[in-house]
Length: 89
Length: 294
Image (tube, rainbow over all chains, first blue to last red; front, side, top):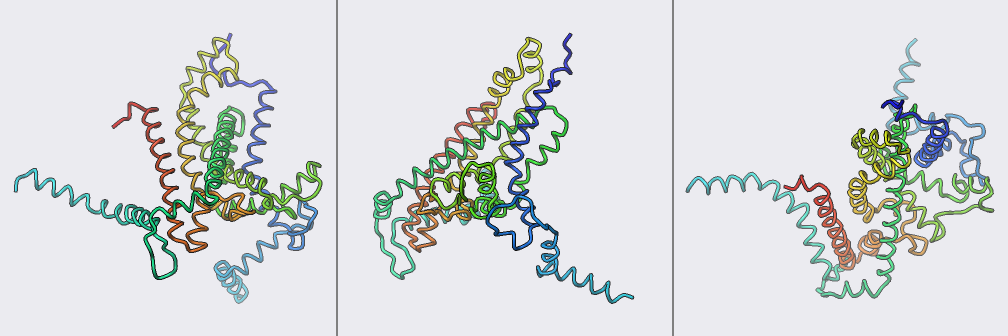
């Protein structure tokens, strides 16, 4: 007997198809962000290296540290923090 | 002074700020551009009235190509947005675990500032270190590196795809809302009669989505037709003008070459096209919701 809750029940291949479709859709939507994040982990020498690598080799969060120190607005905050921490005994 | 007359004056005083605002912000630049389009205004001190010469110059030059290209660009961009939006909305509507996460993950292109998204695409399109060229080489689809923005044909499609990427989240969420507003009993009735999932989508979901699709494509048409930043950041209308749309050409003429008169003539043409689209939009939406007619 059919009951109303069963309308939303999927067979296994329907679920597979839906997840595949979502995967394709989200790949298109998120690809630039993934690429942006992976590039942010790459050391400078790999940024413009010619055979393309997807995964960064010797990847690190160094770029974020550099940004935190060198960007004027952020740097002011972090330097006052670190200096006050250093000066306190 | 009778009561009616003083009421009228009071109404005008209340209207005055809005009228002034529209006059200064909208009406004045519009009229000024229109007047400017009949002159040869430039950085020179003397400005002459040249009549229709600017418009004749436009149609003698390559501008006809530019108009055609703009329409092709807009057509493909809008239809791809609609197709991918429908596809995405029906996927995000299916009751599988994790769908609220998927809905959330659809939003970033809309949330991120447009220029940043475009720069990320510019990075991906790069031939030497870009993701797309690299991936295509790895799966053996192309032999050497492909600089997508360096050839007219690929640059044209690259700008379209970036525009689609920016437009898709809004279209998807709008269509998702449209799908969710379809009464559930329709599906249940069809299901009881033995209609399959695809049949229900084709005979219930799609027909009831049509008003939203038409409304959204008209809105998207207006926004896409004068989309400037994507093409300007990616290619600046290049390679050899292969991605120059009307708005890019207007900018290059008016601001790049400082030919204000000729630029204004192009702007007037764009304005005419956009007014036609807006008119069509209002006609269509009014026909789609007749009960809301004021």
